[in-house]
Amino acid sequence: MNIKTSLALGLFAVAALPFAPTSASAQNMNPELLASNCVVCHGPNGESVGHIPAINALSAKEISARIREFRDGKRAATIMDKIAKGYNDAQIDLIAEHFGAK
Amino acid sequence: MTIKSTRRQFLKATAATGAAISAFSIVGCATGPNVVVIGGGFGGSTAARYVKKFGPNMNVTLIEPKTSYTTCPFSNAYLGGLVDFKYITHTYDGLVADGINVVHDTVSGVDANTKSVTLAGGQVLNYDRLIVSPGIDFKWDVPGYTEETSAKIPHAWKAGDQTKLLKSQLEAMKDGGVVIICPPKDPFRCPPGPYERASMIAHYLKTNKPKSKVLILDRKDKFSKQGLFVEGWGKVYGKMVEWVSSAQGGTVESIDAANMTVKAEFDAHKGAVINFIPNQVAGALAHSAGLTNDKGWCPVNLSTFESTIIAGVHVIGDASIAPGMPKSGNAANSQAKACAWAVVQMLNGATTVDAPMTSNTCWSLISPDYGIHVSAVWQGNDKEFVSISGGVSGSNLPDATRKMEAEFAPGWYKNIVKDTWNV
Image (cartoon, rainbow over all chains, first blue to last red; front, top):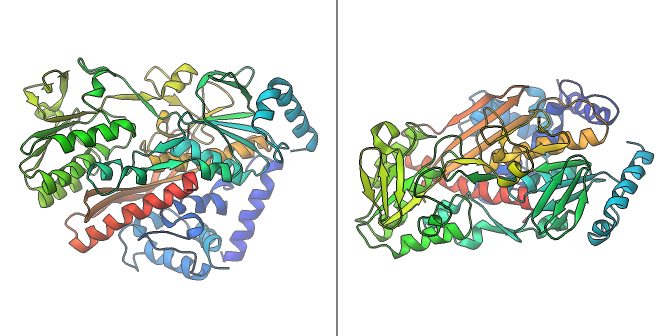
């Protein structure tokens, strides 16, 4: 699934919520909610203060690639190698699009 | 939601609480439902901010007696002398800037029938949905340890004056004394907390009173990040930190405050400073509002955090029962977001909300240059939060990695504080 498709699906799910019961994947495909768990370490909008890397200056493509590398054991990490394994490709793309430099 | 139903809700609210509404000058945001949040810690403050974020039309009121909040996270670093008290204390100015009505008062009653909250000051606030994040309270179930005793033997497990008291006792004690820490039984707030506390106190003693010792008398046989703590204590503090498990006789039977003695199963131990952490239940408000089960915690629907006892009232953070998740500031922050999302969807007409993904990351400091972590991502279902990824720092990692993790800890703290209180 490419970023555009997954983002569109995510937005569709959000828009649909006020009018109908949520679909099975709506909550876990909502970009803002997915990203909300990242900000406790990487800072609101990815603008981290302190020693944890800020992510707001990276492009969506770079973030997406980096999380996949962590997940797949291709990039050394202290902690992101574990956290990344909790997310599927579509979710990673939504998170990347949310934080990526516009 | 239609405009009609919105107006109806507002008129209903105004009729019942005209005085309260005008007192809080909800000008410009009077078009949406009323969400009231009780408790201004990690859970409540995050919930208030994220209800507003996910539903900008919502009238959000946060009720918290204190005008500033001192966090338990990094209170151990304060005890260790790494940060000052100001570093761990935050105002509510950032929430006000977000358009949240912050009311500093105590809740005297919650009425689920009229959907209203009465404050000690006499005000009545109507809600369409109520979110409570009342934290913990203590059981006082060990003979000799009462609220009065805590003025001499601090628990320091709700940060504030108790934390200052413990620090002043550490500063006043003579070199060569024993600092006794008594961690509680499960479940309790911040599972690695007592052991990080032992580490930070050991750091202070090693630096200032090197003949002293930390003795941990535990009511348990295992604890969070145990292997990493034990490895770190050995490397950094040698024999300065000693842990006695319940099986080894660590279980406290009584406290003798007059003689500064802890009577454990096999022996009595005299402490220059004693930090007794009582067993815990949900915060007092959860009990008075009737939200607790027979064990003293709050059962909730794991998709929405709505109480399974009282409809329309959501419980998050330490007080709630979220099987699989620890009771921690980060867990409360994560639950608050899932709850805020559910509350906004429900107020916008959704009839079901699916179970959330939540997460928690926690660094503990063994020394200023030695950090370790535990982290997890969970997928909720109707019974529990299932860990889908996570783990702890590796054992025997290079010093440089431990140092990097020690630097991540304050990084996490600053960012989660910003996310929670907007300060």
